[in-house]
Length: 114
Image (tube, rainbow, N blue to C red; front, side, top):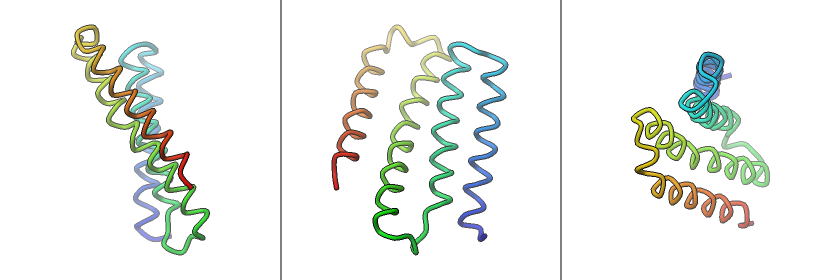
């Protein structure tokens, strides 16, 4: 194991543990959104740790799509978490709807490609 695989594994572990810690303390609203944000970062980091230049092309293609799935969710979850934390969720609901719509479209396009 080298630092290219170890570092993302440490990031995934600590981020997932932090997300679980927060959601166990605060089970609604901001706690759940922080957990989802941490989950996206943790799973993205986990996928990064498996990525290698020596992977077979088919495996790398699937793993790359999964990487992009989690990467696209990170900013959406962070925005949603921030809007709840700042009590701006009702004022910015339309923006949030647009952002999640863009994420859904991007992820559909990613998985529809060969």
